[in-house]
Image (cartoon, rainbow, N blue to C red):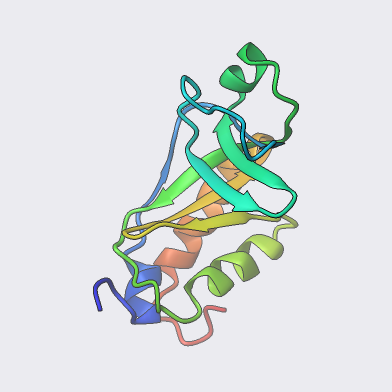
Amino acid sequence: MSGETNLGTLLQSMQPVLHPGIYVFATVDPAFDCSGLAPRMTFEESEGKTLILLQEAAFTHGIDHEFPSRMISLNIHSSLEAVGFIAAIATKLTSIGMGVNPVAAFHHDHLFIPADRADDAMQALEELSALEGNPHRL
């Protein structure tokens, strides 16, 4: 197993990074050719292919989309078997009235949060990370 599993270490060392650009979620036919789009993520569902891509690309290619968001990467190599990491983050963001769409990749977790709340999300994540070591952090 690779990656960190200790919740305290994950929270204390997550080092959130806010990426430039506005991302959106879209769904297209499974046969849709994504070449030229460079989606950040694709996922096959029975209803269609889900894309997370830059809003600019969605506009350029005439793709209907929802949820303008910013992407935050958590720069700690979290194990795919880690327990409670995303739950702790979601709980913190819930406390400020914010939803999150997390994506777990092999090395890192990525959060898609409302575009207009990026600063709030970064502050909340930094607070959560700084509070590690306080037994009453959550």
